[in-house]
Image (cartoon, rainbow, N blue to C red):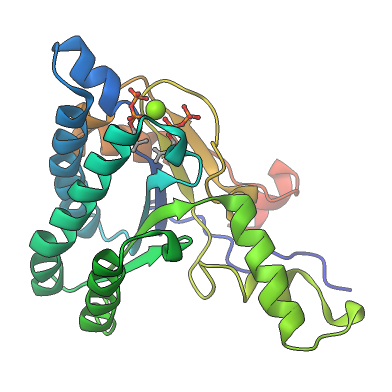
Length: 247
Ligand code: IPE
Ligand code: IPE
Ligand code: MG
């Protein structure tokens, strides 16, 4: 009998895959009496630094939540400005990512985005697909529940029988198929919730919450999160004694 569905269980000092909810841009701006979009702009700068810091620390996968399927509920003006910012970032940043050996991916229901954004995403993914230094994934119009539903749909479309559906089969059709599950999850901005991010993949991820607002997050903050991660014992259901014996 198969006793574990976590073959990727990862215990090394440095997390292989870090997933981040970049929250707190609006509050950062509000504190400075600036419009919310100023916080989002600063957030893009922060992200640039965090990508670099992850690559320097030999983290092989970084996944960030940029826009949730629920964020369409924000005022129209903010949604429009966020889309513009996303488009500018795609236009201006992808070449640099490629130069630095970074593989770029976007997950989410992309059909809701403009043709222009969809084309930029396709081109960026094609350009960077063979890069191996860091896989950088942006979740945009992403929802964890949407992901599970689309995986079930595509799996059923292959003609499987009910008996053939198991965790592995479903995992193969999720947006993050083929990538390791996140070892470390970070949420900035003080809220302690998942907000419909990678629901399936976070099953055994170490969770780290910080009050630091995303625009203020930097390499030092990242190191604090990694230090916390290192202090954890990942048991995956076993006892502490079993884990220590195996290591
Ligand atoms: C996160 O910052 C960015 C997005 C959700 C796009 P917020 O915009 O949620 O910032 P707060 O939570 O209002 O401070
Ligand atoms: C989560 O942040 C989504 C992103 C960071 C893109 P939100 O600010 O939208 O989350 P809630 O609504 O406070 O849960
Ligand atoms: Mg928020």
